[in-house]
Amino acid sequence: MTTTATTRKTPVKAAVASFMGSAVEYYDFFLFGSAAALIFPTVFFPSDNQAALVMSFATFGFAYIARPVGAVILGHFGDRIGRQKVLMFTLLLMGISTFTIGCLPGYEQIGWAAPALLVLCRLMQGLSAAGEQAGASSLTLEHAPDDRRSFYTSWTLTGTQGGQILAALIFIPVVALPDEIKYTWGWRVPFWLSAIVVLVAFFIRRTLHETPEFEQAKADGRIARMPLIPLLRDHWRDVLRVICCAFIAAVSTVFGNLAIAYGVEVGLNAAITLWLVVVANFVALGTQPLFGALADRIGRKPVFIYGALSSAAFMPFYMLSMGAGNEFVTFLLAVLTFSCGYAAANAVWPSFYGEMFSTRVRFSGMAIGTQLGFLMAGFAPSIVTALGGVQEGGWVVISVFTAVISLIATVSALTARESKGIPTAELGRESEKHEALAPAV
Image 1: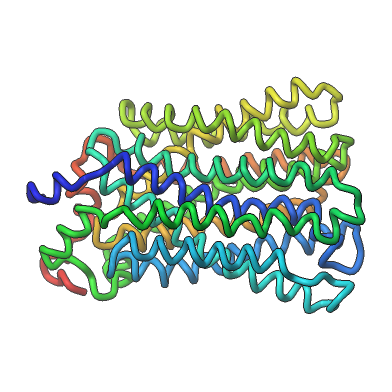
Image 2: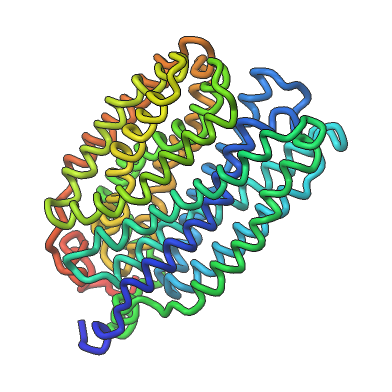
């Protein structure tokens, strides 16, 4: 890389912009998840029962159908025109779709058209989210110094925790409202408030320039006209590896959405279940950067694998504690499961996955690989609910499900090459045997 490109690296600014953008995006995204568990079965479906809850969780999963499509489209443009431009688009799309959800009429007003419109807005959210994490992670990774890439990129996912905290804090007073307010206009207010946080993040993100790695690749003529072609030709193994590793994200939806419904079923107050999410995510704001820094010292693989296996180990104890009547123990196990377990894998995957790919296909590789893997996360609530996971004794179903996806992620991670210590300009280049022959494919 040239000296000019190196002096333009702004890792702190990139990390802050990625944190804020991810916080806004996932405030909107997780807000939908909380509402799907506690509000939408009553507002958007004909009966408030187990079938309505399954259908409501299915609308949550529809975003994960849109994500692979969005990954191909946004990944293409992210690798063609730059990371920053695409990230501005994803931010605005998420804000518009979330605000619109707050304006939708319910089932009593327009019948089945209500959940249909809800699904349409959810698909827009999915398209936006498909590019957000991959783009923000690529941008931060390429701004970061070689020896601190995992630490700086961890702030992208720490931003998602901030978004989930904000969504839960705003939703807690909503669930405490009387039913005649909560199910009419009360639930809509958090969705309308997304307009404010989107504007704040928009003005922060628009000041960040393109990454020096991308600009250098552009200057050297290494920008692919169709990034999907060299990606699938040279990096198909890495894409498959990321898909399987990304199954671990289902732990987040189990913890943040499914466990809410299960906790209410076994007698926990709805507000308590939301506070479990808030506390665990708040602690993760501190643990995730630490896990990122640890991965810069000992490697990405051991930290990621620890996060996957510890998630499986702690989950049954956490679920059992919800019906035991000791809220302190439940909060403690929530922190252990999420903040000290899953947070390790969550903090490290932006660098772990991103470092598998070269600059010319990094956005596409991360976006497509993660979004296909995230399909498991999207439909985990509806799948596990249909299997009885939110009924009495459902902790067994939830625990087995978590163990299976954690094992898949662990085995996949074991097959990856350790990328700690490899210069950013050399990442993923060993897979591109054909680059010299077809640099502009």
